[in-house]
Image (tube, helix red, strand yellow):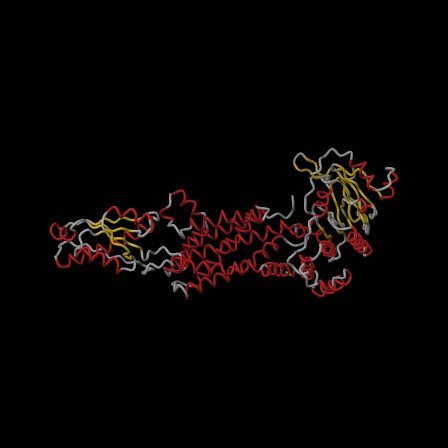
Length: 368
Length: 254
């Protein structure tokens, strides 16, 4: 016990004396939450629109007015002929050009049919899809207005209801994502680096010659990062509840239980990486390439897993973060209890057992 | 061949046909020797001769492929944990924690070897006096000059009063004056009954040892006191003895 305590104290000295790293580790979740919450957002707002309306009539004016009035669009230019469309995109003056056909209102009223062309800059396909969809909706709304006076016997009005996140706030999606990422980063990356550093410095040799039990070495390496992860978990929770106003709909206890399980998996991963590598650089690269990137790309944090090719969906199944993020979303956003995430909990527990067994087996008691 | 090791409290290290193979390569080839209590035993050899491998087997860091060994009365194959408790070890690489203070390093290693707090405190105070480190106590080890670090590393390796201390090229890169001081610490340790097993490159240091063995290509080619070795090889210095033996080597230094 005395052995273990002396060693844990030493690990805390290591971490606390490396001020820069501590600061980075503690500030990172705050910066990420603020970045994702306020700066980086996939919600489309204030898209610049240019308008080409050859006949300045009432119907086209109404539509333009509606577009401009919405939060999604700013009408920034009026152009007179089709030759001007190319320069608008080339000089990035607008992302969307709305083209009305000649005598728009006249055709609309006489034949009941008129055309509007939406030309979008699709260099960012996600954004282009979103804002053309918004524009079509606005045009559709105007059509509804017109129909209000003429009775149409067939009306199908889809009523869309966004459950769990009615305002479509991005934070509901990325808070679980950031949680999943930070934990992996701190637990897996930092733990593996801390263990490999002993190998690199030659102190591991001294520890192996000493009567220190290997399991104690491992436990004491893990403890400080476990504590740090809990601090970060609390920071992220506080920020998301009080700054981003993401409520914790479900039970907080279940959330903590699932998070502790995930932290454990991440620590075991770090341990495994440390047994496979012998330099800090290698440990960092492996954690970076093999953990961070898949967590960001394949966990469903940024790109929906359902849209991925089947092979990538299988790959995503072995990423612990995917299961954690799914469970956190269920508990935090949907307000479900721990019984509804039993599958995720089961998979994470299984991963934990496998990782711990493999890495304990591989952790060398002797130098060869 | 006699397979049982005779128990003799005065023999602190016993190696019998100790062998280590890595694949086809025999790093240590049937070496046998005994070291007595309180002795300074020099373990010499060129780079790649197998010194470090032999030493690692005796410390329990590496499993022998053949032969047997006993350290402090315990079998190195089956009683590794007991061996570990009775020995100290200082490696080639400087191996204290740079970002820990002098006293924190002592506290850590004291704790690892199961010493209690009072014992650690007392011994730390004594050691600071002996090393004249009183005002360096709160310095980070990383800020100390190399010679100081090495003296401290040695003191840490014998902090828990082991029966044997293994020193793997302890004075590499240190100036002659510090080396001399370092050897005074070694003599001081032997006067307290600690047996010293030391590998070195420096032939002047070989002269300080009670007995010296010289390894060539994994085998022990000579083993005696420096005085006897010099007369046996008709040499003026240990350096000449070493040169004569090392010339036989067919193995390339790594």
